[in-house]
Each structure stands twice: as structure tokens, then as C-alpha cells.
Length: 146
Image: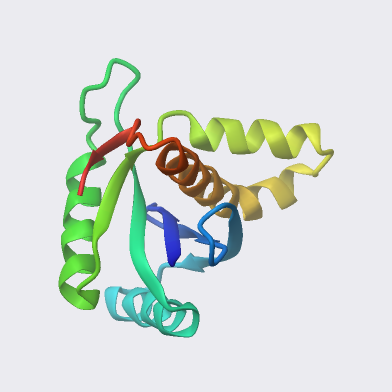
């Protein structure tokens, strides 16, 4: 079963995909948002190409666990995904994933411009990998709802 991970943003949507066994997450090219139709077509193409059966969407809760202002937008996007593709959409706590992604790329020696272009993809991979790891451990730790 292939699972798609997403890091939702106003300008870009980071995308990651699991392997067929659901063990590892790998980043795919980031979707640069132009309009809703373009985003849904790009996601639909990936779902069809890879046989995606579930989507894990990063959910931006605050460090204290309360919902951040971006949560309303993510909830609307999750509803749009469910309606457009009839797939389960799981919301997963994405606290500090962008920061972790930036730190990992900095440690790897990537220049600032390259980090900026890759951060959404890496964050999506971290969100999805966290979900896959928790799933293997038979726990849904970090899963908000879905």
C-alpha cells in the first residue's frame, strides 16, 4: 500500500511517498501552488501513477498542543482532498518538522538557496516517515484525526 505525505503551505505543498511496503518515505517534487485546479490535478496524477491509498497531511499544532491559525486552512484542504479523491486523509502533528528539515539540510552542507527549494519536500518526508514508524509500532502517536 502506497501512502502519500504532504506538507501543506500557502505557496508550496511538499510531497512524499512511501515505498510499497510502507517502510520508508521519499520526497517527490514540490507542488508550487498556482490555483486549486492545478494543485488537485497534480495530486491526482501522483495518486493514479503510484496507486496511493491513503494521504497523511501535516497538521500545524502549537507546541502546547493547541491548534494554530493555519489549522483551519489545513482542515479545509483535507476536506477537499477527501471529496476529490475518496481516500482517507489522516492529519498528523507536524510540530517542528520544517525546523528539523532545515537542520538536516544544513548539516548535510546544502546552501541556503537549495535548502529553501527542498524544505517542503523534506518536511513532507519527515511527516510521512513519522506516521510510518508509528504505524509499524502499532501506535498512532502524533495522529490528530482522520
